[in-house]
Image 1: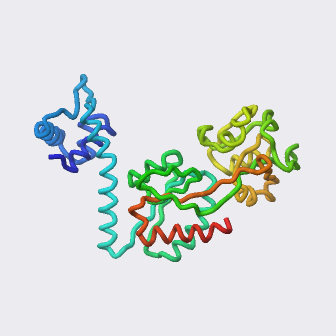
Image 2: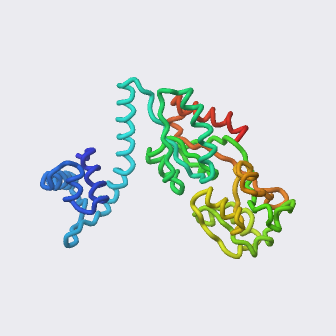
Image 3: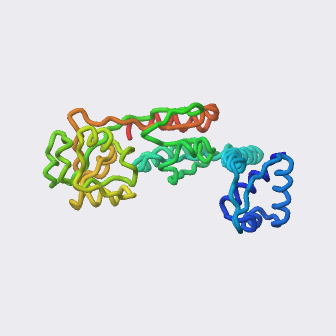
Length: 297
């Protein structure tokens, strides 16, 4: 019946686009791969693929098998990795996904003392999950997710680790630098620089501009924090960032943090994990350390 190799074949054919390429990756002959899948189809009484000329198209059943493969294979790989680590007397690797662009500098402050406290645990930070961290948690690709926007779902736990304020960043010569706070209409003539994130996930839009029906003169996306701040410092635009981050750069770059609205925009950074993993001692230790250290972000 359905075995791990069948899942791997379906997943790899989808990735590689052909039986030949998938067989090469899996170190199988094409005939062995084809025979294995044909036998499975006969046992199940259903087709996994339909041939369309020289290409293969997954059937509805095949799409389901692919979804199972994408969910199960990472879990099996993680289980094997951890069992191997146990056999070698190691504790494991803590894989952290980032869904918070400016939090990398904060995270570095946590990783250093953590590695010192847990010498038998490695840390791997993955930034490719900036826009898909929840799926990465469910898919066992990461163990912790750093995010300012937790999405509470069954099986996941989000721990708030520190509060911060989202502020407008301008250079010290900007007309708004001396303002007590900014009103939305004051940004209508500005170039707003943000990370490359959809506007419905940007607080400067969802909690400040959109409710007032206001748009900036132009919206420019920049991926790296340092370049974004350089642009602001040179008078090329304004940006919205955490106050604690702006304070680190303010003096050396001539930047000023201005409150967004009379009450400001309050946010929290959360660490998300699978509920089933919360009893892993080195994972819980990282959460505890982050919560303690975050009092001085």
